[in-house]
Length: 199
Image (cartoon, rainbow, N blue to C red; front, side, top):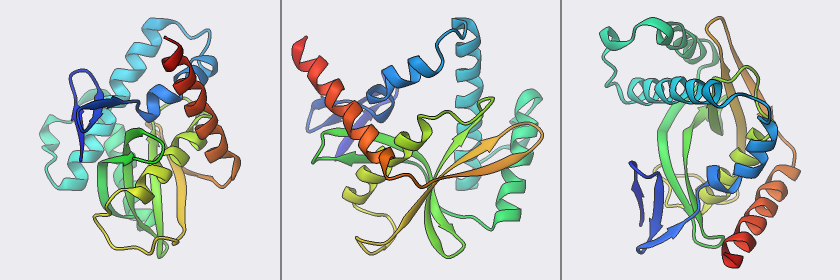
């Protein structure tokens, strides 16, 4: 059973710290956002966290709509418009997954059904969908297939991967179909492990 410490954003498996998907892809993320001022990144991260929490609570039916104000209101509108127009049926939100084979963990945003297919969706509030979102969702899929599912699906069943790009004005579902995504993620994991073992 994977344990998560939210205060330090640390995952542990049987008491042993394991890297997160975000940590593994950290160097690629840093390269992608190179040149963006730290204060801009921090503000964007805080708003992104708030949007993710809003979606999680809405999926669980626990959202207090009176608490959604200011900059968050348009994102709630776009999230609900996506639900209504796409027909997406969430089965899980903020679901922790773990790969014992590769030794990492993570928390995927959304998993459910869309057009009678299983889908894994990562919500993005960034100006544009980052390139690392493909490898990121591939990392989640690898771990998801190892994790005990909360819904029944065949081990070999297809899982489509997407980014849900949310802006205050619109939503867009961006598919990831490249087989290179999993290779990039696992390569990043290999580099991460190499650097950790050298420390």
